[in-house]
Image (cartoon, rainbow, N blue to C red; front, side):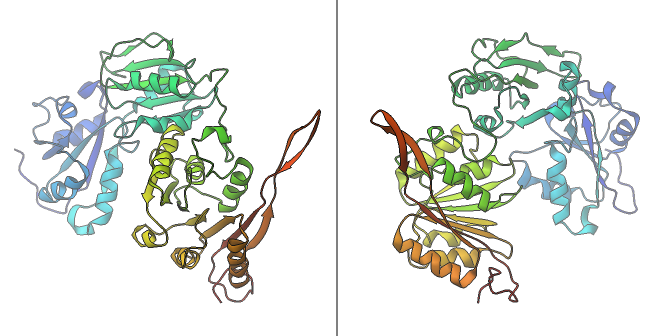
Length: 430
């Protein structure tokens, strides 16, 4: 073991390494690994380092990894620590976890993080395929459900899917077939940058029959929608047929207007109260991969249906809480926005949602009943915002002619909570 050096605590250094191992590392990365007293990484990564060159104590990551990180780093504080990562540590890698952990610790304990990146598997794959990286969407299935891939499926798009293991390509092909993208063309690139690099022959998801190969792989997909598959756009207002429902569904045109009023931005959290079929929460999450949502639905059958809809439409991370609002709201993390699609007449619901919102948060509530409309009119009087009535009519056959069939009008209250008391309709409490 290399003896510890006295002096100030050095930074933890994360070194990216590729399938080409030691031979593919640049000089600064080799120097760091030679000088390290502690080498932490996965077993496969540690095996790539020659013992004669890297004499530091070798420690494999335990499982589960994240809870162990603070204690593991603290146990070796005062020593030169090098952490190995596949490719670019800051691209779906250990670099993010270490940054978050070190930010939570006192500065004197472990010091800052230093990162020495290596070309990522995405960079290698794009180079082999001749695909501009900026035109490619990357979806990781490492530790994540395959269902999240569905949100990225759009005709003509190119995807690079980071595989969890050797079974992922077949799982991707099955999902493409199930979601109406069976004609999509696929290739699997294995051991990118290493001596055993291999790319499979191209095949469609419909015809995919390649056996499982190397677990270190990435799947390239050129999306092609089947002619009879339902077209799902990238903006709110998906076809009603995209959802499994029992009639409790915010219809397409009202849904688009509602999401416009909610105005999701990346990273925000929505409470969807009275989830029904989950359409508002699902389309909130589809606006950006970092958007989060919790839907509250008291009917267990509908709650299960929401989960199925979320999986099918590519947002399996939607949290479904089975219970009645406002009783269950105290258990939820603070929202950035709230949508109330049902249960407005439940005592205390509207006030509880308003109180939960921070300054700048948005609340949107829809109703079709006179009783709930009266509640919204009162809330509008107290808090301001916008009170609108949305009416949609559809052309339908009338004998041998065509006429309009009016859907029930929807009253919508939309408001942003502020702390500015100077303006009588600023949205602040009065």
